[in-house]
Each structure stands twice: as structure tokens, then as C-alpha cells.
Length: 328
Image (cartoon, rainbow, N blue to C red; front, side):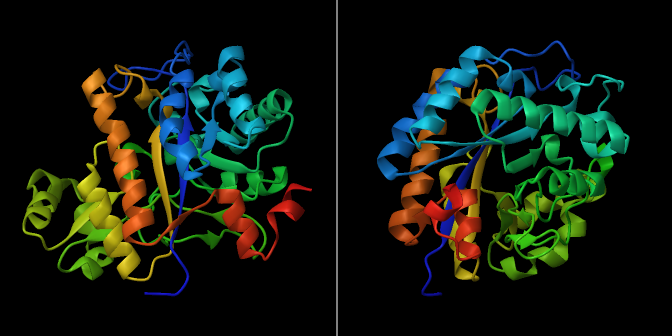
């Protein structure tokens, strides 16, 4: 294992509540679950963990949500970034469809206008321009990259390595790195992908099995499940949503053991209030959800010897910048 400790950051997709089983709708703008993020801070604050809340338009335009998140930002307990859900972000010129929910499928001018409008709104509400971006539904495309560079973003966290959303009309992230990399030039736009990887007896073969694991036919034949149950290879991601703590810890152990040094734990903000996502339907689910987060963070720190950071702090350290100099 390398002498440098592994690093972990938290990214929260901070968004409106909606029924995940129903079509997307512009009318879904409630953000009542935002104050419930305080529950996670009962874990984060004692650990010195500072999450990045990437927020979308309904959150950025809700006074109560902004007051809560701005308070976290002012006290140094959170960083604020941008998260574009195109169906609830102006200008509203496109038809609301599943394909258009991936904003990389929108006309370039419209995607650009939506990103600009949301960026300006966040800057106005929070008193500083965001520099971290995450595409809604991971819908990052070539035009997205160019707009982010134009607007001065320095970090994107939209990629999901080893996963393809192509059959749903979204991007294909197979064969993309599972560790941070520059999207343009060194010192420019840094991609910090969601932590998605493999564990098992032949985890190293995972990247060669991406096509199989993303195949609808293989899925119908339950091949990915058979591979996982056999202990040969499992694909997983670092998230308390649908992934228990033991599996997340196995993933971290395998990836750290293979030399990976940077990880992001992610989830959606409505999961911290029961009834808004499929992952947390009851108070018991919520208690389990929070316990998963705490268990994984403690395992990362105490067993793997890791330390916690933020996306912006990590980028600054990559470039040899001090935190004080970056803030100035």
C-alpha cells in the first residue's frame, strides 16, 4: 500500500422531491427535505467531514433551503456546487421527456443557457460563484464540458465509471477512469468520478467484463447476480442508497488494495427524509441509512487509514496550492 493515505469526499445531489416511479414534471419543486441534512451532520461534524452539496434550481430558489445551506457554508461545514435537473431549470424550451432529462441531449444553446441561469442563481444566493458541477442523471456531454470551462468551473463529478446509461438515452461511461483526471489540461477542469468499481476473487477482471455487466440480455439471464454470488466479481458503488455498509467496505478495501487513492461517497438529499426515495421509506430505513454512512466513514478512517477531504481541497492539493491561497 502507498505511503500516502487514501482520501474520501462526500457529494450530495441536493434536489427537489419527486416520485421516482413517475414521469419527470416541471411542477415537482418541493424541497422540504433540505433541513433534514442536519441529521447527517451529526455524523460529519465530529469527524471533520465537509460535504459538497451540489444544488439544483428548486433548491437554489427556495428561501428556507438556501438559508439552511448558506449557514453550513458560512460555518465551514459545507461547500456548495451546481446540479442541473433540466426539467425544472429555466429556460423551459424543451419537451419534458426521459431522453431530455439527460441535459447532454438538449440543443447545445439550450443546455448552455440552463447551466448559465443556474450558475448565476447560485452565485446570487450564496455570494460566490460555484466551481463544482454535477450533471443531473449523470448526463454529461461534450457541450457540457465546454460550457463548464467557459464559466470557470474547475471540478466536474458527473462520471460513473464502468456504467452505461446508453439504453436509456444517456451517456456511456464504460472504459472511463475510476480515479480523478483532467478533462482538458492540467490545472483546468478536473473530473472526480463517482466511486464505482469491483471486488471479488477476480476483481481485476472487472473492467474486461463491463460489456457483459451492462448488457440487457446478460441482465435478463441474471449473469451479473450469479457472478456476484459466486464471489468472483461484483460491481458496486460507494453509496448508502441500495448498498449496505458491508458491501461498501468490501469495495473500498478492494480498491484501496489495488492502489486507488481517491473516493467519493454520494447520495440524494431527499433520502434523509422518509418517503421521498426508494431507499428510505420509513424511520427504520432512515436510521439504517445513517448507520451505513457512519459505518463506512469509520471503516475508511480507522481500518484503511484514510482521511477526509473535499473536492476543492483535493484539487488544490493536486496543484500544490494551499487552502488559504485558494480561498484568497
